[in-house]
Image 1 (tube, rainbow, N blue to C red):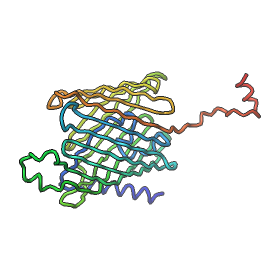
Image 2 (image 1 turned 45 degrees about the horizontal axis):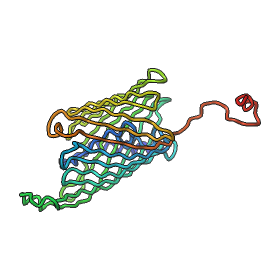
Image 3 (image 1 turned 135 degrees about the vertical axis):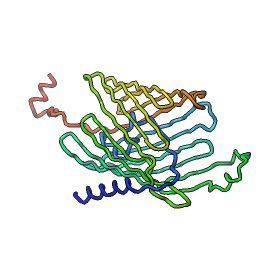
Image 4 (image 1 turned 90 degrees about the vertical axis):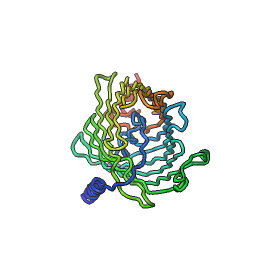
Amino acid sequence: MKKIHRLLFLLTIVFCLVQNKVNAQQIFLSNQHIVNKYSLSPAYAGTGELFGVFGSYRRDWMGVSGAPELKVISANGSVCKNMGLGGSISAQQAGIFTNLSAMLSYAYHVKLSGSSFLSFGLGIGILEKHLDLSNNESINDPYVYTVDRTSSMLDASFGILFRYKNLSFGFGSPRVLSNKESESRFIWTNRQVHLQYKFSFNNTWAVEPTILYLPKEPQFAEISLPIIYQQKIWLNLLYKKSSMGIGVGAKLKSNFVFNYTYELYQRGIASSSGGTHEITLGWKLINKKNDGQPKPDNKKPYYDWVNK
């Protein structure tokens, strides 16, 4: 067990220290973390549920030709007491650029004390970039036609997560590999930090503010404030540097969940668009804890008492 801890610690140090000046890949941002925390970091794999599967669709700047579009399918779950596995497939498109990605991730969870946990997550996958000029032959730039229109490379992510009761704090990178001149290299320009805390006022109402921050390009900050009713229905208020949004969601029967978010932009080309729409659907297999109550048994007096 100590060897595993040392290996994870060493890998974390390597990811933090090795940085090269290369062109970072564009990171597509999503609001699905309201119902799918695994989208924030691979370290969330296997936390909270036995298994969960999610599908998300996001369309930015409705009405603007070539606006970004994102489709994601992901799943994660626990495989034993201290480990989790996850995977995702995504298609990201913005104008003539398309990114196809597939990634598998592994998480290891260490219990520090009765209520605190430290989790390490690593992901590895393949990223394929495609440049489609089939409908853009009028582009008057000879350099464009010298670019390799399809290229594939290794992709990776990592995350470290600390949890204490209702508090979650994590940092890492959704992409730590890039490609330049057909050579994959480590980078860490897409650093990501998030902080989350759930305030439960009573059995009926709760709020769970989340802060998400990317200090490097693309620099980004987001504050979301879900207002939750009976753990089944929520209204989410969203603020970003260039937009504001509102979302609604619910937990349905059989542990199905959905979340919808609408964002309205304040400036730039996006301000003249129809806004951004994102919807996430998911299903969770919850780990039902023992509530301490005796189970029905027709051979015990408790069974007769309950059924009186």
